[in-house]
Length: 266
Image (cartoon, rainbow, N blue to C red):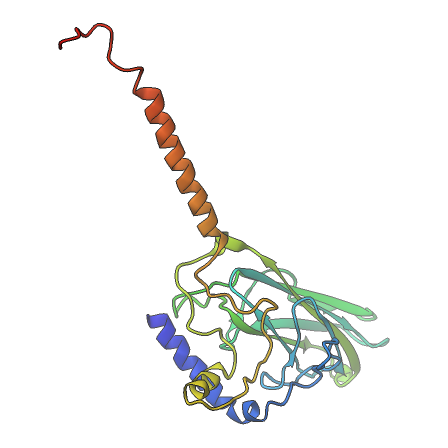
């Protein structure tokens, strides 16, 4: 399949770029081994702090910094990313923006939500939100649809007065998803989810070696295969109902047997 070859090539490129970081198995900054919410943010895609869906992460920084987090999203989910930035007591007008990128680092457009907001002078905080399109199990290479894998969140200020640059701020970020189900199901699936380093891990497993994946987070119930959805259940129910309707129609239209006006020997 064309999509599998294209995405596998892209994954291999990401995996090779992530090789040194994946080899040492070091966690992303601010990540906690005991499952507690991270208190730091990364400064690039490679150092993005991993968070689980439903987990509220916090971080401190300065205006002008780029803050990065990452989370997993699977097929059939519609992710929502929300962020709150607490501003210093004294500041001018500032415009903040939240961007979401998929595993191939393609910026994903928001279906709705205020991904860019301006905080007037003296405002104590600004809230941002981005609701993505439903993650698809498979897509054409040119479609730019959200696909299963790691998603990156980038939070930064895009417009401010020069005097406000470098002032301390704190941020809270949370990622959640609504499961859409069979309504968004498609035929086909990716060979692997779009997780950085997954191509390196697959090659290492084939060679019998051990290799860590740069992004270790995944959905609580694991990655779905892509072929199963509740659409199969409704398709089965529809088939059974159609069969019952056919049997009922035949029973109603066949009558009680031989018409009385037909002679017995006819």
